[in-house]
Length: 174
Image (cartoon, rainbow, N blue to C red; front, side):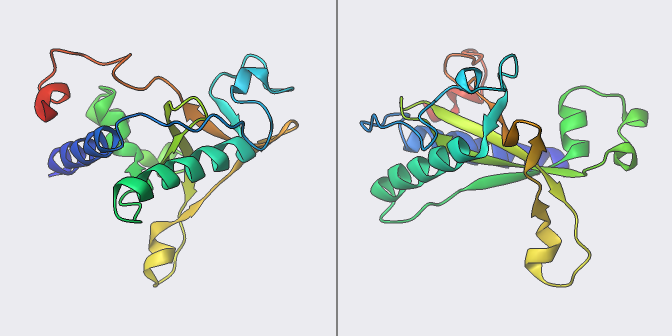
């Protein structure tokens, strides 16, 4: 059953990316004035760390593009992914997938677009809450922080540059 949900999530994600056509004519800079994490003071060598201000700019830009394509709506803003699903996808043996050893049991992957029109996927850990409201059961984003400031993880290798062109998933939208 988890494989079905994971497959459906991947298809929806790919559909969203293709629907937005990975094009943006906007060429403004982010609020930090720096687009790439490696250019950010204190973030040298941390290519996956993206300052929170830049992440917010990317997410806003993604929203603007989607609203222009989907009648003023942003159909998908993020995906919540369970750690055991990530472990399984990475081939971790079943006996080692015990998520009780993880500090966070889920991550949330936000969609964004940088000022160059490149799609971005940014992840944050999700803190579980013990409440009865739907918002509490979804958990809360945990913005990471170190001596250089608050940041998210930027998974910056989008398809098609990093795709398996022979994959039936990649070719499903053709």
